[in-house]
Image (tube, rainbow, N blue to C red; front, top):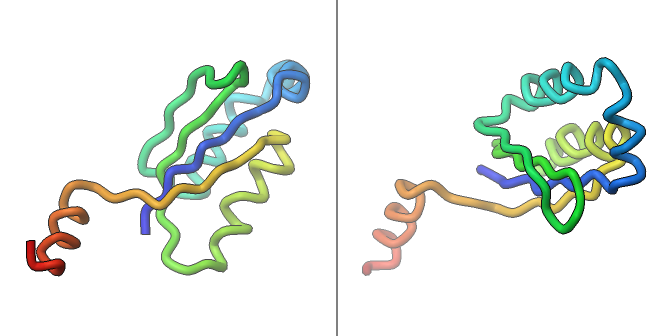
Length: 97
């Protein structure tokens, strides 16, 4: 199942983290390790923010995917289930609409 990870790095922690010369490599490694379908970056609510689309087939993937964000980036994370258009079509065909 696809999820949108809404990842905010608080300003104080982010100011320290971006000084690490390996910062961008750590983000790239994370994206590769979780096999993110997409990754986007920008400001939100005054924080450095990352948006990742990831697939989690079973709940035991939650700590594997979220812990690096908490530990490496000191991030606040929200997890939202999402669908692509084909998923939505499939769902509505089962509703008989």
